[in-house]
Image (cartoon, rainbow, N blue to C red; front, top):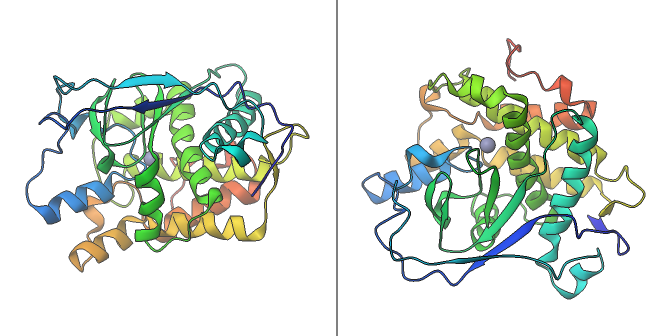
Amino acid sequence: MEYRDSADISGASVNQAGGASRGSSGGRLAVGGGGAIIVMILALIFGIDPSGLLGGSTGSGDTQAVNPVTSCTRGSDIQVNRECRWNAYLSSIGQYWSGAVPKVYRATSMTVFTNQINTGCGAATSSVGPFYCPVDQIIYIDTAYTGTLLAQLGAKGGDAAEAYIVAHEFGHHIQNLLGTMAKAQSSSQTGAGSASVRLELQADCYAGVWFRHSTDDPNGAIKAVTQDDLNRIIDAAISVGDDKIQKAQTGSVNQESWTHGSSAQRKNWTSIGFKSGDYTKCDTFSATNLG
Ligand SMILES: [Zn+2]
């Protein structure tokens, strides 16, 4: 993935949270046993609303300053400060969606954190993985975790895979704006064809659509993408399939507890988004065969 040096990325609202004090009991996942925790952590990858699983407290005693990143204004800043790549992703993805759904579009922001953070959906630890909180409409990313996560799951790293994660979470923001999320969340079922899985696969599809259009704007943050970048995205989608994670963690696959979809489904819908470049083709809720 190649960035455009001259691109204006100053409009992307990225915040850096730092200086978290020692972790308190707030924010711990409410599940017991090391193995169970790992499963929950992985199941939450790319999750949408962890409020039911996070500690409800806001972590009393923890103070964490959240400051807007103002030092990333041009694509060329990424060469000086790699953290500016988050601004580039958010800028490019926001640019696409503001044009695709102009009537309902509202910008979202992203908070990059380490360790622990208080959100509108409760206190989150970095072990939750990246997520979108519909309450405060912010995308939360733990940088260290996101990097090691994809490596652990066997996906090749790289900026494209990272951007895919942000685009997936941004997809949840679009679902929130379009009202899709509220409809899907009225049903709490899990399983291969559940509303939860359909919502997640649609977010994958939305990420694919953005990637297709990522280089459209001659002044945009992303200058060029390669087949290798697409391969990395597909690789990431496959790596976070419920079946693959279950198999790795428990040795067996239980479709009934799926929340995000299988590797094949995630690959399928990411590909549908990329190939069509049309978000209206991401109608996972009408599909009889999810792939
Ligand atoms: Zn998700």
